[in-house]
Amino acid sequence: MDRGDVGPGGSRPVVVRVPVEPVEAAAEADAVDAVARAGDVVVRGPLFGVAAQAAGDGPRWRVVIAVTAGCPQQARDSLNSKLWFRAKDEAHDRADRCALLAAVARLESERVDALEVSGTRYRIVRAEEYAVAGPRGIEEPRPTDPEPPVPDWTRGAKGPEIDDGLVLDPDAPVTPAQALEQVALRSLCYTGGRFPADVRSDARQALDSHPDVLLLPPTFTVVEQSASSWRPLSGPHASAHDARKSLDFALTWMWPRMHGHIPEDADLHADARTLTADGTPAAPGLAAYATAADTLRAGRVNRLEFQGSLYRIARTRRLLRWGPDGPESPRPSDTNTQDPAQLHPALDEDGRVLPED
Image 1 (cartoon, helix red, strand yellow):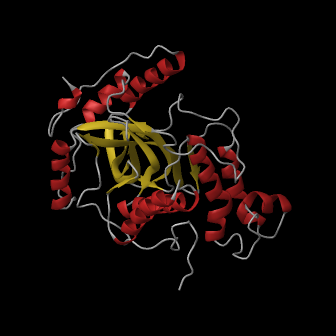
Image 2 (cartoon, rainbow, N blue to C red):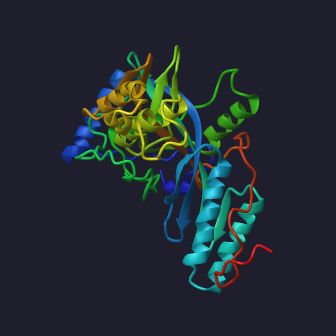
Image 3 (cartoon, rainbow, N blue to C red):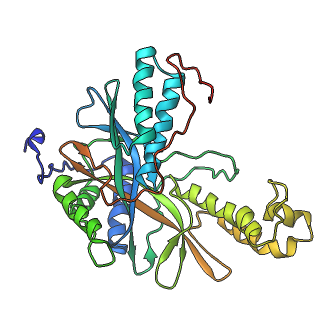
């Protein structure tokens, strides 16, 4: 099949390569084992980000804003800020700056899902977030998922960014396990009465308009087990270690304040560890929080029981649908939690911030 002839309803061929490099071969074996352990797909819902396609990129797009936003407008607002700062600090000349500011003006007043600025196409893209589950529950991190050689638990330390430098290439060869997952998920569609009719209709239409599937890198989320489901407690993270750090922060800083063990006016650096070590009057109630958090640091801990609840580091996944013109944009039935708005002060043609009045 000529890839240039793919039209609506037609799928691209999947190019499969056998991994031979040892680390990648181990990851492939991990993926095969994961299919045997957990085969049920649990769909959480859509996530949104921004991709860009420059002249000469062919069918490839680059993710310029991570596909992690909960609604399309959040992704549009992120693009608004990105273009505004480019106009302020990076524009090559007045013409370039005016083109960027014109795009910002549209994003301030319209729900724009596609823009072209100085030869680069920007698109709000939509991905489906899901996980797999089996008899032991939702999937946890795999042994070959990236982990820092020496875990850094410093609160301000920065880990890897989600989708940093990610190129979306529909023609890139994939491993056998990835190919199997891509083909199996081509037919993924919202069904059942709990979904509104317009959501189901848009999902069916997407099967024809964007028949192919690209798998984005896995993310990792803290979830809490309830009687019949798993409830996410954190946003997605690029690594399992970063997800553990977010649970450590909740145990030592956030939850003690929420439950009154640490006063609201306490020093921002005070947490369950420091106050327990200091022997302050609040320490007896904090000891359990500090002990639970210390358990996380004993190794690559992916599940933790605390005060009657079970917390787990879940391996979450994202699929992005692809059509003849590239990645899927938001669907008409996708909801927005906010309206377009001006986010930054006005700039003149020379990049100077104009007075408010």
